[in-house]
Amino acid sequence: MHNKKKVLHIVQVVFFLLILGAGTAAVLFGACEGKTQSELEKRELKSFPDAKVADIFSGKFESEFDEALSDHMWGRDLFVTAKTWARILLGTREIDGVYIDDERLIETYKDSDFDDKQIHDNIADVTGFMSAITGGIGADHVKMVLVPSKCSVYREEMPGYMPTSARADSVAKELRAALAENLVKGASLESDEEPEETDDTDPAGDGSEEDFNFDEGDPESEDFDFDEGDPESEDFNFDDGDPANEESGDESEEDAEEEEETDEDGSDDTASEENTTSEVKTYDEASAREQAEKMIIDLRPTLAAHKTEDIYYLTDHHWTTLGAGYAYAELQKQSVETITGMQTETVADDFLGTDYNRTHYHKNKDEIKRCVIPEADAATAEINDSGDISNRDSIYDTDALKTADKYNYFFSGNYGAITVNSGTKNGKTLLIVKDSFSNSLVPYLCKDYQKIIMVDLRYVNSSIYDYLPKDEKPDDVLIVYNEEKFMQDTHQMYLK
Image 1 (cartoon, rainbow, N blue to C red):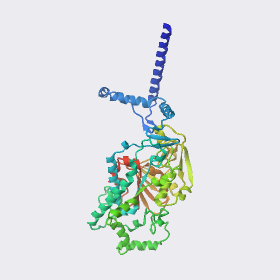
Image 2: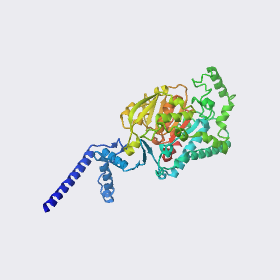
Image 3: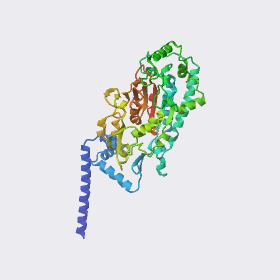
Image 4: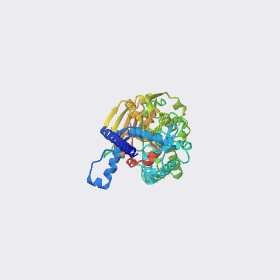
């Protein structure tokens, strides 16, 4: 009996040593691999800390060393996936802030994910920017599009016990109220001043707001209109009657020259000048609220109407090319049949996105598709990556399809500024302030603009005007943000 106990103790010790040795070897092997990035989790791995006396006594060294050991353990991805499946088998449907709805992964938010002061500051910054530039190009040429997250569109499909913040429900209303207030303030300020002629040149040359020339008194800018409900805007063509547009076909070159002559001597087209200069001066509270309603576009109703379709990726938080197409149709008041009737091409069928990276669960992989749009296929891009300029002969990056983050197929990812020259030849320029949702929307916009300047405030470190070409004015300005990402953003100050 005594010998049996002794043998049992020896077996237990040997078993423990084997496990300890295997674990140590696994950790050391993983550490020796030298990996600094986890493609599965889309994050940087913790590095092993330096052994400093102060950190050892404070406990910081032990904590950081433990995190590094966990990150560099050999076979970690396999263990993380096994842990996820174990939780699912035990009935867990929410993992790391993502709800598992059969095959669809839905990112969720809690009220604690948002800071009311940050939201207030972001609203003040973006509406201040929007109201400021209306004096130069007209309020109908400035829009902000709010893209709802999957948790907003599919809220009814989620169980009642799932904690999902409704904070984003009111952000469109708050934006409209703040924008209307700014429009009224701008009107009262302008009404006390005599209108001045602006000079297209920039005497300072310092990249200030005048550099991009949001100036007043350009009669041609009134022809570009994001005007909802205008039957002439069905083709997303904001230039009815614009002589600079080759697609209008309704006006001869002689007529265009006559218009330019009358504009120069100020003897004609006073109505257009009044629209650009007096629009800021004539807003009362009622008209400002009405204008703000047009300028802030909430896509919730649009996307909710198509939620049974593949408008979001199953494993990623972004909308699909189809979802972006419905947004484009809403923006131009075009029938959805124009989008669903477009020819598409599947460029990848094994995409696993950001929500998968957080849960390590998927039932089906996603497809990456693109619409066959000749103007987008012919587009080139100049990328400003923190001052490093590179040129691409396509807005699509096929090399990204060989990586884990296949959504980077659109524009190779996110950069501070990207200038797109499309296959459209109409002389029109769009400035778009954006997050990553715009990357799959811009190919549609290539049909309507010769130049598209994309600015992502998350990747700049100074004013937006430092990233815009001097002595050039856009015909339209479009701001596109996911609701929750806009509320959490800490870079809206660069709009000043």
